[in-house]
Image (cartoon, rainbow, N blue to C red; front, side):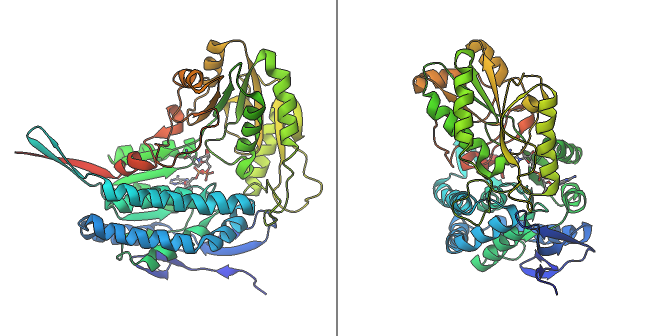
Length: 475
Ligand code: NAD
């Protein structure tokens, strides 16, 4: 007997309608390996219907007043607030993130970000006088939003909310592993009363639905979050058609502990940072850089902190680390650990063996590796699992060289004896965000990468501007 939900519809042009494409995607619970649901594997037909609806809506949605958009987005925010428990349950089930973390981050952060856009929209100036010109900020057109599974609702909200606030209609293609929270979001958009076509959802694979969306002539802006490899393809296609593109890609961020800083706090915070969400965070500090005189101390402290992270059932409020998202990811993370050991890394804690107490579910041992050299694969590539590598540096210049020595540049941390020292060091890093002495996440600050970590920025005013284009009228 079938125990799971079988969805066959997409949210297009203001209503749920049967998918016009064949095939479906099976959604698994990564902790139990049970089927949660099936959703349609949309393709060219669904994408075309969604883009057509969005195009039809573009002029009228773009002509709405700030007050009209604010009223609808406020209703959406209220819907997100009312659905916090349902969002948490959904993300725990399809992503396997621990329930406490999920409630705070996967459900809570989208609410914070949506609220931040209500404040921004209320005060943003869409008109500016420059000499004899008046410059109007206008909606940039139909937006294709393509999102990954690791922060599934946050990444949706970080694109869809500013796009709608800017007056752009959106077609969302969420990740294959986490379409259920995307469906829940579509329901909340519908309940908020947005006009038909302003928001559309097409579930499907990247190869079919994603590629069809990026290549569709009716799309003006592509906002993509995912791997650098796919981001490159998306940029190529968008470039050929002169579509605007924003890319939030991978990372291999460094956390640099300078002499004289609070190493206890720095290492503990780093371990928490890298094991959160089972290490599936693009901005995670996956490389800990410490002065050679403090190297063994840092390893001991990291081992002690890592012992607090015991993989377990994500529905248990005591659990701090759940499974990774799927079997492929599990094999990939274990492969990186084995590869690092083969290249000469020292296993401090963890390892690639299965978690004996958890025979079901995609669990990885939280792992700390020492004696990692900068050229090793595990020091260069994004693992996207709970794996921290520790590297020693000789002096500040060497620390800068190591921190900047990967193709990525998304985030980072710096710990100094005071914040001025940390800030001076951070200014030398080729990366989009740096937290100084444990500085808090700021949802209004631009988020995005240098180098292979991406193009463009999300969140705050910079995120809104990704969806605006400018017209100058000369008087
Ligand atoms: P992915 O690139 O495989 O998939 C991301 C999205 O792109 C999915 O919706 C997928 O279906 C779609 N896609 C795949 N192939 C496509 C194609 N040819 N055309 C159009 N769309 C396509 O990445 P993933 O495995 O889902 O996510 C993990 C990666 O995302 C990691 O590398 C991580 O660092 C990165 N990431 C970056 C950020 C950021 O903000 N910088 C945030 C989260 C994740």
